[in-house]
Length: 286
Ligand code: SAM
Image 1 (cartoon, rainbow, N blue to C red):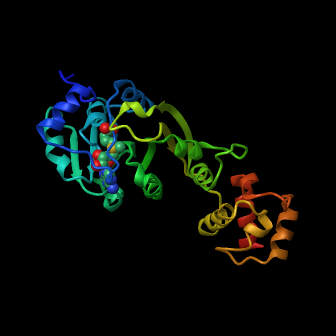
Image 2: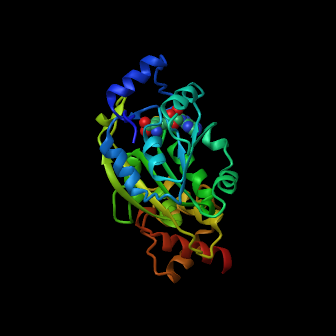
């Protein structure tokens, strides 16, 4: 345990002065200044001394430090070159942290896993830069065979959409995408005041435990269908699914919906993942 905990606002201010650092809005730099939420993130991610953690956007290293105390190794990918010398300073006491100066979307996650954690899947933990939350989550999920879980701070509204189920008002294509790939839950709420600078909206921590369920379905067609349904979400599914991305014959779709006992008056928001999977299977194979 070191003398200064990085999340202490006084220490953050000291670092800001020492490095003459100014926050970049464009890079989504809202740094955590609250020890409680950091503890909740770390506890929620269930890290042990056997785990290699992939962190996205370490900032000043606040969360990184707490992760380094718990994990075997922490690989932190930071896009902002200015932060590299700051991190060298703030994390100098930890020999199990590796900082990579890159855009996470350009990193090869499979290579990181093979190099640093060949025996075990990675655990991803981050206070995400909000301007690219969805691209980062999609990028991580594309390599889900390398990742056991993803514990991330996101905007509260995004968190609600990620975990929503069919009857919730926040239910949409993101909810279905998360449901298809993982078991998702909100593990903590975070008011905007615990960030420096404060963002405009509150946040929440979501934990995704990745799952490799085989739905036996053409994924491309499934997600085109879901996108089509939610892009025209006010229309009934007979109309929303037969226009836009897909060229499905209305009579064919009506027959499929009748066979599946799904009313044509439904909107996409009334359909579960299983409904979309069943429709896709019928479109593809029948
Ligand atoms: N982890 C720190 C904390 O909680 O105090 C900082 C979190 S801040 C919300 C997001 C961090 O992600 C910033 O350090 C920012 O520079 C970094 N970042 C932004 N875009 C990135 C990208 N494409 N790849 C990697 N890091 C990125």
